[in-house]
Image 1 (cartoon, rainbow, N blue to C red):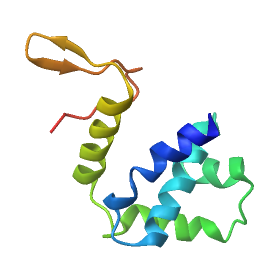
Image 2 (cartoon, helix red, strand yellow):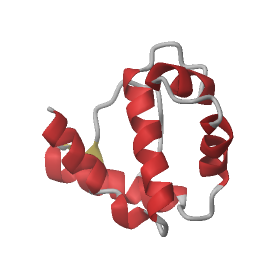
Image 3 (tube, rainbow, N blue to C red):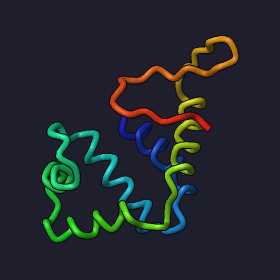
Length: 106
C-alpha cells in the first residue's frame, strides 16, 4: 500500500515548479489521509506530530505560486484514469467518489 501511495504521489511531481512545494504537498496529503478532525493545517500539524513552527511554512504552501490548482486537477484525473476503473455514461467519464470534494474535469 505504501509503495502504491508513493507511486501515486510521485505522479504529481511535475505539477510543481519547486521541490519544496512538492514536499509540502506530500506532507499535506499524508496529513489529510490520516487525519480525522478536518480542522485544516492545525490538524495536519497535530496528526503528523510536526513541530508547531512548521505551521507558518505550511500556510505558505497554500499561497505558493509554485503550483496551480488546474494542473493538480489535470494530473489527478490522469492518475485516476490510469489506476481506477472509469464508468462511461454515454460519452461522459464518470468518476465515483465520496462527495466530499467536487472538481470539474478538464
